[in-house]
Amino acid sequence: MDAGSLYRDVVENDAILREILRSQPCSAPNALFHRANLMEKAEQFVSAFPGVAATKETEQVLWKPCFYKRIEDFRRRIRKYASQSGTDRSIRDHFFKLSGEFQAFLDEAAAYYERLHGYFASSSSSSSTAAALQHSMFRCLIFLGDIARYRELHSHKAKKHFAVAEGFYHRALAILPDNGNPHNQLAVLATYVEAEAIAVYRYCRSLLLPTPFATAEENLVLLFERNRHRALPPAADGGKTITASSLPKDKSAYLKQFLHRLTRLHGLLVAPPPSPPDQHALDSSIVCDAFTSLLAAGVLGDALVLKLFAVNMFCICRSNSQSHAISLTLAMAALVLPFVHDKPLLLGPVSVLCDFFRAHPHYLTVTPLEETTSPLWAWTQALADALNRRQEATPYIK
Image (cartoon, rainbow, N blue to C red; front, side, top):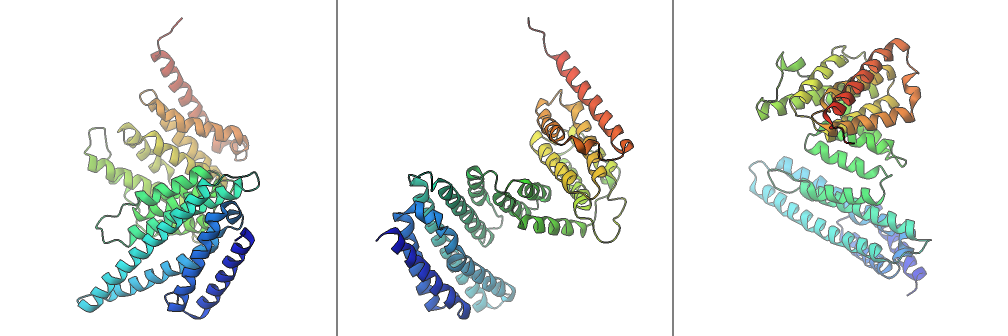
C-alpha cells in the first residue's frame, strides 16, 4: 500500500475509536478491538513511511485514545481499590490483580513506542522530513518517560527509583534542547522525591526556553502554594549552624531547611499571595547567612549553586518585586566569590550570572540606585578579591 492509503486507514480507525470512547469506557471490548486495529494500522504506516508518518505526528495521534485514556482509567480504578482494601481479602486480591494488569499494559505501551522510535530513528531523512522526524523521536521519548514514570509510581516497591524515566526525558532534551517539555517532566520527577528546589529550577528552565511548556507555569504556582502551607524552619535552626566537621545528617537537615526557606522566598517574589506576606519569610539575610554556612561547610557544589542562580535569574525576569530579586541575586553571588580560591568550579555559576547581566544590563539600572549600589559594589569587590587570590596562588611562568 502507498503512504496515502495507509494514512487514510489510520485516520479512519482513529475516528472510529474516538467516537466509541465518547459513549463507552476504554476497557470495553469494542473499544479494545478498535484500539488494537488503530495501533496495527499506525505501526504499518510508521514502519513503511516513517518520514511521512512523522509529518502527520502519528505517534501523537495515538497517545490519548490508545494509551493515556487507559492509563488514567487504570490509575482511577487502582486508587479506588487501594482506598477500600483494608482487611477485605477479595478487594485486596482485586487490587493486586488490577495492578498486575496495569504493569502489563505499560510494558506493552513501552514496547510499542520503542518500536515507533526505532522506525523514526533509522529513517534516512530528507530535508523536508528531518525536522518532523526529530519531533517524532522527541515525543516518543517523552511518552516512554511518562510510561516509565507511571510504572514506577504504581509498583509495589518500598522505595521508588525514577532513573529510567529520567533517562528518557534527558534523551528527549538532547534532541530538542530548546523545548521546555522535558524540563517540566523532570520537575514532576523531582516532586516525587521531595526535591522541591530542583523542581522549581526545572519549571523555571521549562518556561525560559524558546519553546516554553505552558503547563509548567501552573505547576510552578501550585508548588509555591504548597510550599507556603508548610511551616518555615526556625532561622539558622534555632541559632545553630554547621561546619565542615558537622555530621552528615546535620548538614543534610540544614541544607533542606535552607532550600525550603529559599523556595518560600522565590515563591513570594514570583507568585505573591493575595494577602501581605510574612516579612520574616521575605528576609533574605536569613537565607544569605545559611547560604554562607553551607558554602563554608563544603555542602554546596557548583551544580546546585548554578541551579539556585538560574532560579534567581528567573525571579529577576518574572518578579513583581524586581529590585528585591536583583539584590538577592547579587548578594548570593558575592557570598560565593570568597570560596572560589579553594573551589574554582564555583566560578562557573558566577560566570553564567555575569553573562546574564551582560545580556540584560538594564536590570542593574531599572531599580533605584540605592537598592542596587550596595550589593553591586559588594559583588564587584568580592570578585576582584577572588581573582587576586587566584592570581597570587598561580605560579608565574615566563
